Image (cartoon, rainbow, N blue to C red; front, side, top):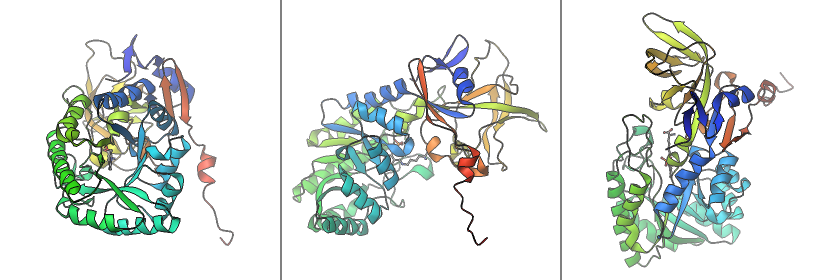
Length: 421
Ligand code: LLP
């Protein structure tokens, strides 16, 4: 459930009419609902009630400072994968003891930054990375809590570009070698082994792969404990999918996912961490755009929007589906017509949808892309020197721009022409 609903024939975000925001901010823009973010975070937090746990929001899905602060104020931890995300979390006021540092290639500089600012744990993904962190920690005279991310060789049955738990993927260490690698980690100075970590992929719409992976992690935990390691924390990663096409998709609910966690690892008396990104932010955001032209082509009609692949790359990168709805609710019984919905960027890949049934459209109409709160703004670029689009947050009847649209001068003045040119 989200808080983007038609009211009196107009799409609202909570209590604010979308056209009102469009008039104030200009199009295109991202629009997030505080109530939806809150609701989604709580589904996980309450779903794990009774187990010691921390819900660490995967900041890669949406790292705006306002979103981070909202979730952190509810008690969330953060899962970060770069020095930049670490700095953002700290700048938004998240204490180090609630920040988990993940990622397959952390540099020594990033490690140093996390050790200086404080970190809950570092999730290690290879032996060379383990050795590097040990060196950095020793040089700083500190000891850092670590887990090792294991690769359970489980097929997450999701898009190949976001599947991470198969042996051919670059992530984690093979679970078959885990006991050796844990023995090595335990012997390294500056590291304290405290847990196990796994993450098998993103946009999973079936619980079975999670179940398989979590059972493997549970038996590994028992083996590692028998080997003498103090495994007191289990990080289960993120990945629960969301309904993008709400009419025919019903992925498992967070409550069902949390029940699965209880069943598979609940008996281990360990602190549970999860790292959901998309499920918290995805359906808490829309992208609002304006029709610039309606163009009749050979046998097809195009809606040319003022947003493009640089603003929302998911359709061209993963062929992903986003619902696109008219901001003015179509009258009941209105005849829908197929449109190719495209942006102004000069490549055919700049296509959001083909032959999408839409109500008759005219230049100036507003449309909204649903499920755009995760991996939308964070993956945008300035391709074609198109300014990054603003982000707006709604709470009840108030809204605020939480990242403004840069001016052309701001963009252009970042370039430096050397004086010898
Ligand atoms: N933890 C780790 C270690 C991850 O690599 C990821 C996502 C997450 C947590 C959060 O997964 P989520 O709950 O959001 O599924 N850009 C792609 C998604 C890439 C996901 C990468 N890792 C997309 O637009 O679909």
